[in-house]
Length: 217
Image 1: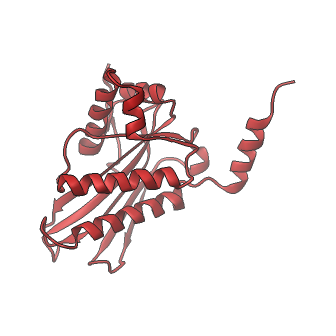
Image 2: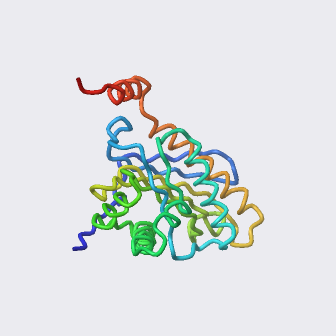
């Protein structure tokens, strides 16, 4: 039964940074638990089925960049990529369910805990990661548009968003030549936010490794 979980509507932490990339970069972060409290470090990288408001080629370039950087970040013990999941689950309904879940999460900030649980089970992952790039109208901005990048981490067994960041900056429009370099720079900033707020403390990592290395008897 579908029981929607509304997430990200009231951020616990909000930051606004003036970085001078092409104007005002805003960083809004929502986080429900400390990095050391996150129970799993295996993550499935989700894929949306609906197209981004950015050009498709640029959107895929940004998502692919994020996927590579998340896998290389060292923040997670295992990252199941989009292609790995599609290959392992070829022909199974769970692939389409994953698209539906990512679409709802990205577009409406709604998490279906039943699908989240099944995705985690199928991928052997305790976390789900969703990201997308969007182009937004901004009436109050000096420039007409803002390009934004969203990253979300969901606890698979509950469907609860435990971390969400939205980073955006000003643009003149869809044809702005600054769009691609700016969007890719925002991707770098999103990874930096992950490294700052999701990296577990070194002593907790050491404790967990020692605990996992011990065998009964």
